[in-house]
Structures are given as C-alpha cells and as structure tokens.
Length: 310
View 1 (spheres, rainbow, N blue to C red):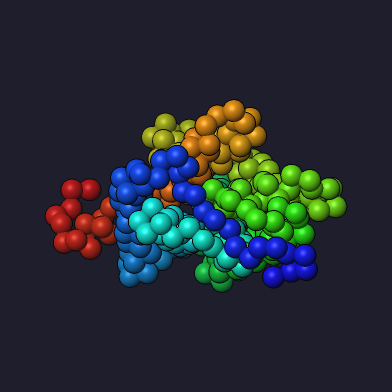
View 2: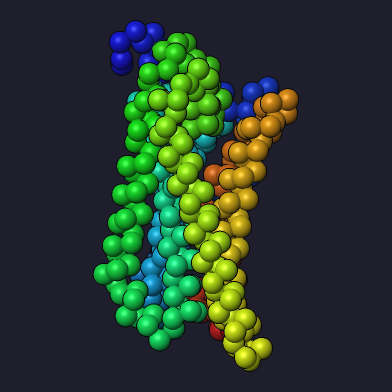
C-alpha cells in the first residue's frame, strides 16, 4: 500500500493458546453484544418516540447510546468472525480504519460525558435559565462539535501509522488492533511523530479536569440548599451520570495501567481487559439509566405494555 511495504495484511489471533475454547468464549461475548444492541437501541427508540424525553439531558443520553453502539459495531463483528469462523486475516486499510473508528468513538464518548456534566451543572446551578441556555440548536451544535473534535484529533495518529517499521513487515497481531498496532508501531517512535498522541492524551486529561470541576461546582451549589430533601433530590439527578463516568474512566485507566505496567502479566489478561474496555461501558450505561431514571423506566414499561410500578 505504501513504498517499501512488504505486507498488506495482519493476522489476528483472538485468544492465543486458547483456540480450542474460542467457541465457548464466544458465548458470553455474543450475549454481551446482543444485550448492548438491545439496550442502547431501546434507549434511542424511546428518546425518539417519547415527547416527554425531548429534553437536553435525554438528547445527550441518545448521543451516548449511539456512541456505545458505534464502538460495539466497530469491534464485535471482527471478534466474532475470529471466534466463530476462524476468519483471521485483515487488510491494512481495514485494520487502520477500524483503529480510527475505535479511537474516534472513545473520544466522542469522553466528549459526550463532558457535555452531560455541563447539562447537569446548568440544571442544578442555573435551573431558571436551563431551557434558555440549552436550546435544541445549542445541543445540536455541541453534538457536532464533539464529533468534529474527535474525528480530527484521531486522524493524524492513524495517518502516521504507516510510517513505522511495524506496519512494513510481516506481522502477527493479537485481536486488540487499536492497541497492538499503535503500541508496536510506536516502539521506535520519535517525538515529532508522537505529538498527535500527546495531543489526544492532553485532551483526555482536560475532559477529566472539566468534568471534576463541574461536579465540584455542583456539590458546592447543592450543599448551599437549606432543605435536606431538596439536596438529596438535586444530587439524585446526577447519580446516573456519575456512575457512567466512573464506568468509562475506570475501564480506561485500568486498561492503561495493564498495558503500561503489566509487561509480565499473561497476554490473555491484556486481551480480556480490552474486551472489558469495549463491552463494559456500552453494556452498563443503559442498565444504569434504566434503573436510576424514572422517565426511562416508564418508557420501557409503556414500550412492552407492562403495568407501571414506578
């Protein structure tokens, strides 16, 4: 594909040393895959059809659900192709495209969580101006900004991958494409090639800082409310979002530490953590909002024509 390139494809291994168990391993992954599609698809359907959910908070939740579906649909067909059909070969273009979308959706999710933190900040700290600040037009602009920011920030990293010797030699790669390709490609990386990675990392740290700062202001505002009941009610509106933030960033931090400090840990642990990173947040987000949000619960009950107990 490029000058001096000796190979145009990668070979995916799935779970090395556990090939005979691939069919069994595929069962829980398939269940998680189907659950993610049903859970996030149901949220999108409810938010689209229920006019009671046409509010900024639920628009951002719809963006989160769509992002979770994107992450899952980008990764799981390749995974199941390996585990079910032993389909191991993937071309460089397909590999880099998959890496691009995996990273892009991850940055989009971080941006959506940031937007949701801003939404909760306005709802609690400036409740009387909530509808005038977060208009439909402004919500749409925020969504477009999140997508543009993610797409443009990841592109330089993926474009530069083909410069590295790793991508110009015969390669045997494990499944976690976005980590193995970038990690091994960057084994001999120089700073001028590293700066796109630094930029994305800095963006992630900035997102975390702004989210934490938003919740500090929220807590300060809530603690200033005289009534204990009203304080609890205000905090309860943030519980779902806080849980989603914890689920996302704990898996990201866990995966980062495993890859940084787990050099002597069996490779299967690295791969398992990759699956946790791909599947756990998209699986948990619909569960969290279904449990903690009364409007979502009522929408699900109406959708399946169940008597309301909410």
